[in-house]
Length: 397
Image (cartoon, rainbow, N blue to C red; front, side, top):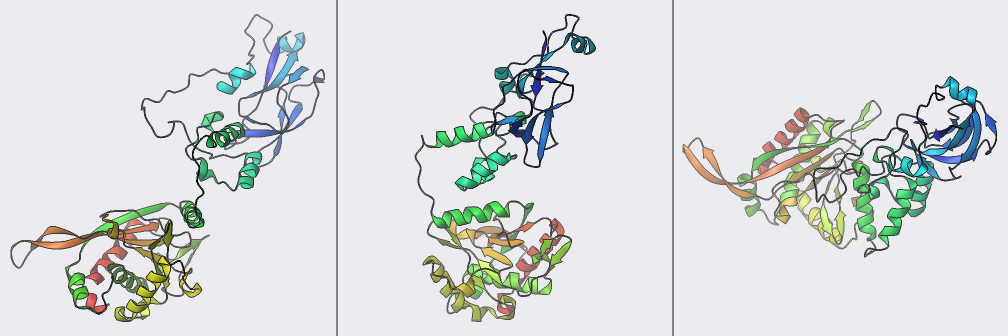
């Protein structure tokens, strides 16, 4: 007698895998076409898999609590002669039977040749899409272990369309034990969590070269010395005080404007970065900020920041030029829309209209990374231009 496989169907547009919850029939039972025979659970709902035809259930190979990708064979139904005739399978046509082994390698009745990547030596497999879909069972297992989807970004899946299945996940965990493992510090875990949440938004970066001659001359005469990041912080605060919308947060269909221009600045600490916050920077002249700024830098390096200097900032300034970097794309904190970056200064030729010749000037790249839902390139460019303009007149800051 002819047999038809029971195939895990596509239960939704984004469903790649489902977990077996219950067997609604037993082997040997007679079923009608489209009769529910297996109950499965996806990340969205509990659904049923129906029989592909009328006949007798030969066996159910799918195991309870196991997850199977779309296209996997879950069992077989034996057709009656009448049903085989109705389906046109009594004229010598080949049986559309798929073995469990082959179905797992090539999900679905139709065998398709897997695409072979033409690029070799990649750091992760070319088809590694990561855990973009997670079944309820896999979510529970990951929550149990304190893991996130980002931790599986380089994992190649064997499920439909290369999705990661629970079997892939357990194999991944077992293979981890064969590697050298060290504990990440609480600081590193906190930074990783913040960056993971930040990256859920569409982020973009614009940049502008900015002459530093005026700022460097002003700094040379200042006592105590003013750090370049503090100049940038004050310039950003003044620009945002003129128009606070770029620092707003999008919540639903509303832009939430900040009540105060509180700006943070990045300080490298042991195994991570801390962001002390200066309050109402737009209302305080540059000279009055120096002492508090230097104090917070030292406290951050000691990881002893007071509570009134943490959290609640609307933007961050980072001086990545201290590492010799001329260009970077910093990521805004999850609760912020903006991060202003300052690159290393370099001597470059600059055309002097008065002297009618090139003269050497010190120039650095200013970068502005932003939440693209709130700002477009034009608005970001205007804000960055305003910051650069303010840095040309540091005596007014």
